Length: 483
Ligand SMILES: O=c1[nH]c(=O)c2nc[nH]c2[nH]1
Image (cartoon, rainbow, N blue to C red):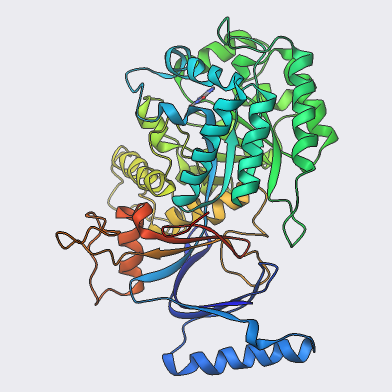
């Protein structure tokens, strides 16, 4: 068992955040949160720990209290639930920061497809994916939805890396049997589906966590409607039907030219979302990347099907796609998480994505027409307002977990969930010559309360402020972590 003693923050729903200036969290050897007691005064800590340990010993006579490892956090340190990245492209990482001069369709043609093509070589995949997964973990992402390239063998390597480095992940091989480039497109619909089936079997054979949940999961990944023939979408719909609990990820309604092209390719579909729906690909566990320009009818359909949205604001700004109205989606009860969308997005950190989600909501709120003087604002509603800290942290953690159908497993520190967590630390020393873990954007003061520490971390933090990263109770990263 491990016990963490210190400050903590987590969310319980989109508008409920819990700060605790002193908590005790016990994590069993299988990685599950055994107890969590908050808002303690320092004099209570030892008594609470001893009560919990003796309860454990009473329940299990063979259990020994001497195997307990204690981690006591310092003042500028606190526990945050591990981040969930609901949308990123592992083969595109070498392109991070390139290509912002293009919009989506040209960006795919000139920047993205030529890079993804390189993954035909498994040696490239081995070098690249080791680095990608390591970097993503170092930024506090404990669960990640990865798009791979079109290649089966390279995508197996990506799954192997997540497994080896201990990251909870959903890994999919992109399906694309049309509208790629002459050298980057799948040979046929049948080979695309056959490779997808092989990848699913391969990933399902990887070892499980001590809780018997899988660490790495397959995810069905039709790249987007434009890149899939009707036949391919139908066959992927059949595959989805055969695997009712399996996640599906794709792009939707990202930019104006993409939407127009989709309508031209699928003239009989009622709208973009309808293309996926009519092929059985819009359901609970579908992760829709972007969703910047959904029509009212599409919003209703997404809610009806209980699909989730990966909000990718950094990418949406970078390649000038649009702004997703996350406040509206949350008001309608649609599941929403955050996606870094590298390399449309130029930063693999969910913290950066959270900051851009905040900016998106502020721009949308500034673009809302002024309200009449007698207008009564509904305090429960988020649409038209800037998103509060509670909602931003929710999107980065529990909201993402909900999108990935993991809400009952991870996303906050509720007893019975698996311990996916970050130990954040904002006490870096900025004295000249003492570079250490210093982050010049974060100003630490010994007077800071937990709310202030959290604000500083969310808006100024980076990997220098991510001291430890845990997945299912096992330390997998953070600075100072050796592999
Ligand atoms: O941001 C994006 N990145 C991609 O790789 C992609 N493919 C289709 N649509 C896409 N959008």
